[in-house]
Image (cartoon, rainbow, N blue to C red; front, top):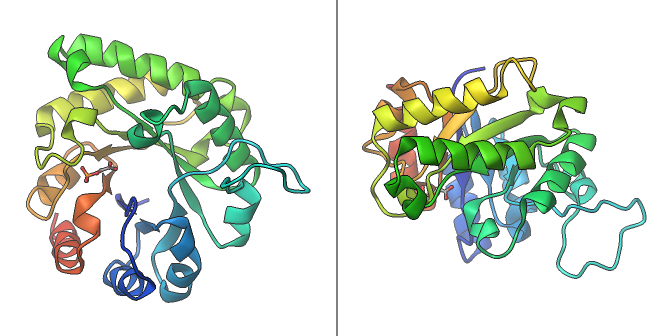
Amino acid sequence: MKKVIVANWKMHPASEREAIALARAGDRENIVIAPPFPFLHVVRKTLKRAMLGAQDVFFENPKQGGAYTSAVSADMLKNAGVKWVVVGHSERRTLGETDAMINEKIKTALKVGLTVLLCVGENRNVRKKGLRAAERFVKKQLERDLRGIEKHSTKKVLIAYEPIWAIGTGKAEKVEETTAMIRFIKKTLYPKPYSFFPKVLYGGSVDERNIKAVLRSSADGVLVGGSSINERIFKTLLQNANRA
Ligand code: PGA
């Protein structure tokens, strides 16, 4: 697999028209577009080459549906044409999502055949204590979030390392530090409990200026937020990614 670029639009854009324009800008091979739920359908219709992603999935998936106001199940996503799902984003964790919930979400998504992008990463306070403290923090997240996952098709689980202090700040982590953490994550997962070498993406202020350097590093791809919600910037970012 070539390096993958996952566009996490978060709560953007406001209109269907803008969603279509953005989807057209990102419609290339090895790209995953994760729009908000109301635009899944229209983005699916627009995409010819890129894959459709979702930003979250509910942890229950009863066959008959259920009384879970606002929740979106793995079956619903699958039937809407979604191939990838982002799980455990720090912005969801901040709103109260626990590792136990994330673990269930991953299992539910894998059961219906979705590819999961699990987000992990430490906050600024942890990072201030140094790389070792950050590694311990991330290791705990991985252990809790991936508990029991090895029974499923783990090839369908990718990790996004997203240091919280680098998200949406315009200050991406230094490539050497990213590389160190990515190496650590791979070592934590392989050869046990995973039986294959996991793909680890980097996310946190990836933009049209630093994309080449990040893609030339050991990261297997990137998770892009802010730079994927402006048509012009998104296009430039993808052009620069091609030159990496
Ligand atoms: P950012 O967001 O690119 O705006 O920093 C990345 C993310 O939160 O996935």
